[in-house]
Length: 216
Image (cartoon, rainbow, N blue to C red):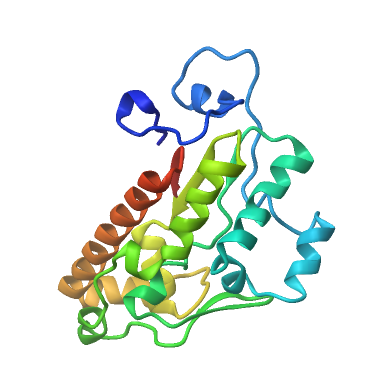
């Protein structure tokens, strides 16, 4: 999904390169835009040095630092879009989910969902209250630092639910499937809560200045 001034969302800084957005809107372009997920990563000495000191969540909670990590690949590689530096787990702590990113493992949930009561205890997500640092990072990038589109993103409800039920990454999703079939009403409640959260989260990113958003 991409947005421009004709769709009610004004860019806060004039883009010098809108190739990605034109291609996303299926307009004629003279070349294919280039961008990569996880643009900020191990290929960059600057990023590796930061990761020696800060965790992913610690970086995302500092707008100035997070903006730097987000724009660095654009400056170094000349890609056609920036990818907001964060994780799909970012909004879950605001809902009462205890998440830790463990090296070599990925997201690990300390309090996985096992019963309907676990679903009921999930807090209603409010982007301004729970992830203000994400929105501040977007504003900083969109208003002052980027001349290419900024892509925001969120995890899809099923993806997030699988982590929340399994307690971490899974290749089989056995517990997730079992919960779907044995707790049907609670499963639908969980999916509804996550769908509402995802929509609100993406809308907040767009309002803050993201040029496009993706759902994983």
